[in-house]
Image 1 (cartoon, rainbow, N blue to C red):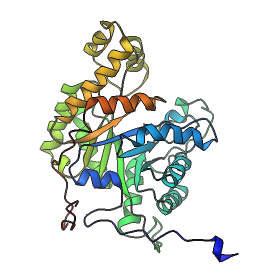
Image 2 (cartoon, rainbow, N blue to C red; image 1 turned 180 degrees about the horizontal axis):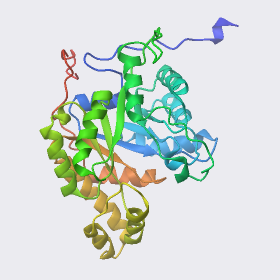
Image 3 (tube, one colour; image 1 turned 180 degrees about the vertical axis):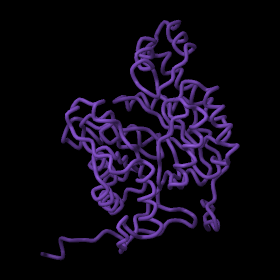
Image 4 (tube, rainbow, N blue to C red; image 1 turned 60 degrees about the horizontal axis):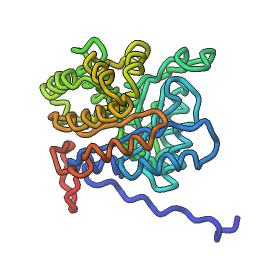
Length: 340
């Protein structure tokens, strides 16, 4: 091989004191900024331009971009492939890992491969069952669940070993996340489940869609009572509804999403229901921002990245991202630049 044509990348800088990664998202959260993330819904395509066109509008308004992993058990471009494209272009992706499709051998290998590419954020998911997707004859794996996947990656990062006990020569420096759903029964159990995910290794969570602010406030009150907001960054999921009809269909057919009658009524009373759905989402972001313990929002709208960008911009959260409460890890010392 001609060595002149082969260049190793520059050595990765170590994370700031008290940080587990070089993640832009982790840095923003630990600085106390109100963080914004969004989903890039993968194309049914092998053309990288289909990824870059969607990422471009999100990168201007987000601290990190989630690359979904066959959500709904439907096949699309892989989360790993999207993250490879995004890191190559200088974007900050969140790799979603679903336990549905891979066993522990493959997933540990994916973690190392992702970290080697420069992926700093990983969201651990159990995953929807295959019967939910368009290929119900597929075989689900579920060798691990979200809890055991979190713990597996945490051990790889913090203890430098695989589940087998074999040592790593280089540890993945990653910021670990999980999903949470404050809006599904049993409601009293949801903060307890969050505590279990934090114990397993979750440093941030992104919630299911929020359409009910009082319900979120009750959840966050319990979260604060347990001190969980001091141990984990909570990003609340929000998104626009296209119409009252769409809202009714979602709450009837999509498990885990709660849409109160007041939201349906607001959409029904609007002359332009799609515009009202956008305005409703903007209102949700502004209300969520004022709830103690909430560290940011996660904005979702299936294959409507331009609309997501408009919502984030018009909500005003980017203009008012001051310093707030941050989480300091045990034995952490502040970084010289004040970001830790």
